[in-house]
Length: 539
Image (cartoon, rainbow, N blue to C red):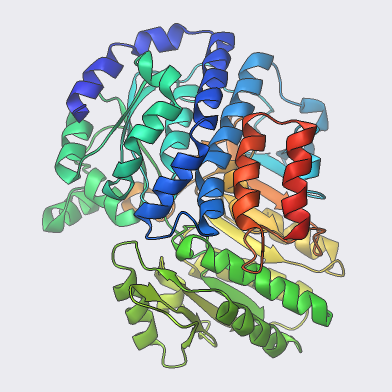
């Protein structure tokens, strides 16, 4: 179906969707879950092929995680929220995270969560002075969603946010990279598509421009780069720059966006034993290499203390972990050029891994000066590049205080941040850091990408980025509890996790674990949990 044909059909159903009661919406989502569950394998197989990976390889498990597993989890959690109704969400459990600011515990949310992620806790921090409440009744109308090209759960999840949080029907214009998944998405969410509440369409820039400019579209959401946002909101070239300087947008509609970030990872300089150094280095390497590093939440800047006695030992373990991770196809446009720019700019850059045709080795850039304007601080590589920047801070408290200021003021973007903190880290300094970091998602001892995946947590830039200087975006997505006025999400995990993370490149059963997790999220049961646990424990 052509984009404008799809728009006409969906726009006619906007009022019907707005009138649809929460229990009826929950029933539709449960039907979508059953439909999507039947397409787990084909979804993952198509995703592998469009990224140049063999569907018979372990990467099928990664694509099952990145696509159907996360989507099925969100469908299940949204349905549970809608079935429960718009009552006040766990208000009695709220705590004061900062003066005048409440944090609401959201994870674990049910009996399954504690088994899936042992020891993990997450909160949504509300905007200052906000009280716990569910959003009930968004603005409604029609949304045009411009889908991401890197992770296959993003287009359906962005659509679900528009439907359930904003009360808008949606037309999703897929990134050309994701076009092969259009029939899979339409079949997976057929109960919504068949009733005219949602449509997935393919096309390029011309089709996207026609969709955004149509008077029937009330709002726009996109996942992509800040350059795409600028081109849409202000226009291209000199005229676009003139409009931005004058505050005269080309597109005069509400635009929300999830964009990029030079995602920092803070390594708190405590005493680690040898096993800790190796485990954390492999965990960091896994965060970098997942999905070929084409993730907006992949760590791109590791902040260390120059005075940490174990800094060089950690970097040696990180080098070994990157060398052990097989290079991946450089399937995302411009990856080779961006990789080459960083390699040329930093003569100390080190490449790890034997790359074959169409692949790139992993690039580690140690000893980046802590100077504003350094490319490693101000440009998102969006490929297999990670830099290390040592700060002149002695001790954990001084390091955390300095690293928070440095990340907030000199590192580009505000999407997500990860902290590695041993149990000996001073608690007041860590809590001060969590309150002070101006990021939409902060994770301690786990990859911040978990905040993207869990569903109960929010995902998006820290509020307040002006459209004239957009970086990581505006607004948020996910938030399956439909919490009103979120500011950021904070996650805490054990420093020594009981299970090897699925993103660890050493995981031996990724293929089985990814497929089994997707099936579990479709319909949780003790039997499916045991099957998943076997793959997780053996990994």
